[in-house]
Length: 251
Image 1 (cartoon, rainbow, N blue to C red):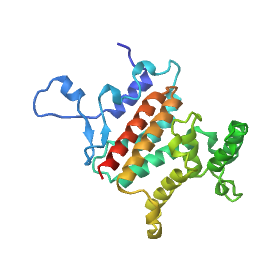
Image 2: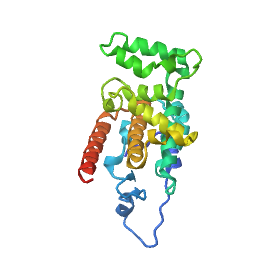
Image 3: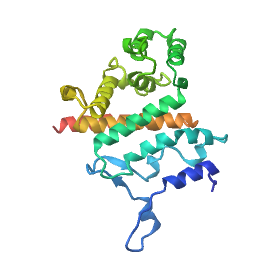
Image 4: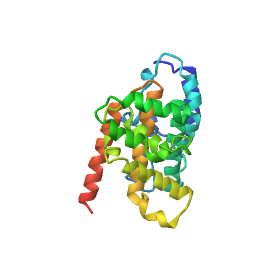
């Protein structure tokens, strides 16, 4: 059995969940425990092998302790997906979107607007869809002289586009409508404005957004650690689409 690296073992220890039982059970009983939200069809934490983003042998041989240290605030926000059973779904949404914003600010473009703009032109100026990418990443609001930071709308589209391989294509092909919906929802719950209530994600759409943002977060965290989970995320997104189609048919 391969022994995990020290920094990985320490983080796994911090993530440990204590599960108690009144009677003696076989070890398989605990390995198969799954934790659910009140909506039981929403699996929050699974301990089956297929639920893992990666196995220990996928961890790079080079030192990733510095990256893990920078990721701690992201992990802490991510834990709200399963650590706090009674947390309102709106708070879970806010934590996950904050985790993505924190990830982007800590690992992309030195969190500087000028570096971000230069990177967009460098990456896409010869791309046949440059005008589309520019509207998503360099919106008029982003390019205002009075704006000195990278907007959440820009950060989300940048993460959705990712390596420009189409993995999260359905979430930016709409010209940024989905990202704007996410931003409006975040702003609504942090800066309450009754007049904007009809613009936000609610109910199952909000829960679905949490699933999408979770996959986006897991994908980019793994890439930062040198692990590509493209195939796993692709399957999860396909299953999500199938679930939504079935749900619509049963309405």
